[in-house]
Image (cartoon, rainbow, N blue to C red; front, top):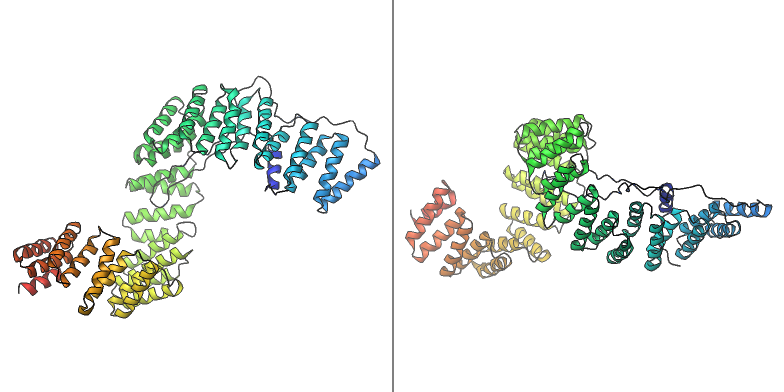
Length: 595
């Protein structure tokens, strides 16, 4: 028989939670990286069922025990089963339990046999065992639920549907609870369309039950049928207007394609039921996702007022205040989050560092960043420390700090190496920067970013052969790297004997990035070096329009001058020099042509 992948804990969990009504409160997901809270879909929780006139049949009752004499033979067989189970002979224990249950009609033995069959992972034996338990103890709700679950997992949908229909019938005094039990079982089925069709069939006789429509809506959502989901959830809301789960689901369904309608659903609900905390939290998140920062903060502040000891509320308000550049409010709320004992204090310290940086208090910013001892922001905090140390003139300390930082993966290793090289290059220490990149390439020899930066530094320190070798390797590894073609081609344009080869390289770069102004400049300059003055002027004008860089202006002016358009050349140079006073490249080319 196939292994249907049961987990022992599944049965144990269902046994310990006979009443399937549970509440799953959504965790508060706060801002990551961009200082924005990310709106997330509220995890469905099971609602309190509508009041029932009689106790729900699914509540556990003491089983009726059979009047069977404990004979020596029966005792021996029972002990044999227990010993077999303890010694790992599960199949023997299961068969024995099934046999005793048949003989005695004892629901306890039937339940034990069902558990052993379930633990074995044998679907057919499990089905037989649970059917026997159900026959012996018809009022046992767990037997019905587990049988339906096993049939669903085994793909026997028609039989599962019959069992689920029986479960709903048994819960007819309280259908809300019944549908929530059924939804829990059906929603985990991998074929979402089949699960939806099954739920629609099951819900058809219960048109006046809000939970029936809500269950269909949830499964329609999982199956990607948003129109059906909206129709069903709105029907659920018409039957139970105060039900927060239905209003929440409708807002979630609208959030992607009609966010303003989603906000209106939440706003109207809260106007009628202002104390619905989870709905207010969803509303605050939805406002934030739409970048309505001030209204979102107002909602979080209201939540914080009702939950003054909740550090997550203070943290959310702080980060929105940071987004609004209201640093005093942000700092006060971050301090509250620390004082109230927010578990993720590393994150709070990181944002306090960000805040101090924004206030240009670099010393305190460094102190906060150093307090980030772990978590997702530890690496970023250490990079900020290195940056600020360098900014304060402590380059060697910054480099040493960077080198002591433990990278979690290759992406962080590359980032760490590039930042070290950038710091050294900015301090006019290109040889050391080049060595840092070489050390990075020793560990990650084919990483495109490291290859490109190392090649550019090799060129800067006069290692033309290394520059060309690294760029060609990069092109081989990443043949769509437009800037590699451009950098190599532009450098080769300076060598008269390699101009045709260089032009082919920069033309390839332009083919890959046709709107890049810097690459247009390279191709235009290549055409100039090839004697194609008209084509050169055409491309250089486009390049200057896209990027008024003085180097592009110097190139365009030179080509215009050589072509005979000296008045336009002078104007091009002078306009650029006015915008970039003292530019050495412009001054040099003007002096060369207008001494």
